[in-house]
Image 1 (spheres, helix red, strand yellow):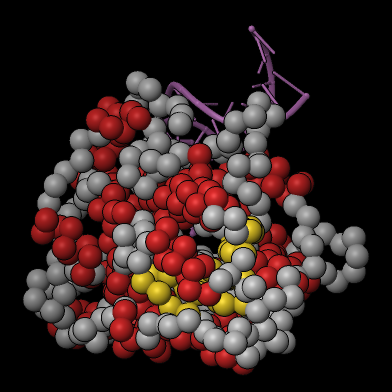
Image 2 (tube, rainbow, N blue to C red):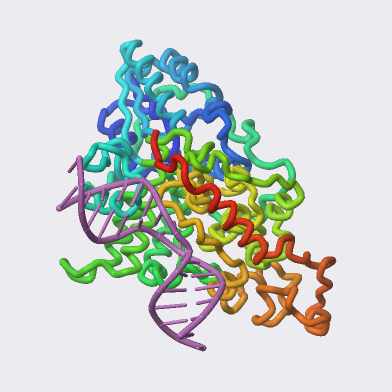
Length: 485
DNA sequence: TTTTGAGTTGTTCGA
DNA sequence: GTCGAACAACTCAAA
């Protein structure tokens, strides 16, 4: 009589409902993690995600060991691995926390049926979202496709129960079944491009808790003022931890709110309010993906099916490598490559550049982010790229085209961000830094720059590109533009 | 059913 | 240098 506890995107012991239920059952627990390389079809985890997963599993192994338990690793389809484990161990119950990607929902349904048919108890829980995506609905009973009413509705219905504590002891079976070694899964890269990752991140529950505590102590009250400046430490950087469930949105919510509480009844400080709305954007993305399963692959607004996208391998490559000649864009793309993460403001700038300045399909950018971001998340990534492209929910108006120079001057005012990630132009004055092609030959020489050699000329003229995008977008207007399933 | 108000993140131009 | 308007029209959600 044992309980199989299947970990997924909930790699934590605190506030973990499936774990709490398994502990409450009072029987030995076998924690397992299943790696299924074919899990997600076309959206199998990218290289940066796998790097994170490796370290997070190592961390979870240690946490479980501290509670007297062990993490069992198995490779293969959950649909074969779990029934096999039930036989091996004689388990009479299987618990897990749900995942909400379309493929995972389908698999969960099949899995539950198969386990229940075998006469074994099966239960799933919500550890990863503030709400169940299917429960939030408009008065007409439809999914929301505009953020603000979604947010109001979510807020009004949200009730946070107390967190489940970390179990001091997790009852072990007499014998644990065989486990793979995480190293045998070869999740880490062969060539050492992950050096910058190690300096930037601490995957695992302890790292997530520390990140949250630091953010809440130092930055949440100033969040709304600082969040747009990539050179400041104004954001939480919790995204990869949230993605892997090393911390849950409920824990984040409680911590942010408690920092804002001065006296009961006081209004929420603006920084806290704005931060919570960002957590709600994550929820909104899952809500959309749950109802519009095509979102990662096809535009929600069908009028974009006929958009005249360009194709240009060299320009795509320049964008990916941070060699576009626009410093703020290149800084962002290099930060991404080096650390597996990019500041949100800069994500919008580089996305706008790929889509509107280069007229390359948003899916190309989505795919690159998917492979290189440690926080790559199917729902958030797809929703955000569609938002910038203008083909998604609550999308940007067609004329909203970021000017990379203006954005650089407004949000990297002192140039700290560009100088850090594009050091070859660091000696330029603030005045020239965001547009090196306007520097005089003397200024360039004094800064040690040979444009076209040590740093590229702009690969596209923004003014021309803006007009080109505006006319393409104008022509896309009309036709079926509603969002429907 | 119809009406009404509102809709994350911008840029440019001209007064 | 600053500020407001224009850039479109449409869809959504609720009354």
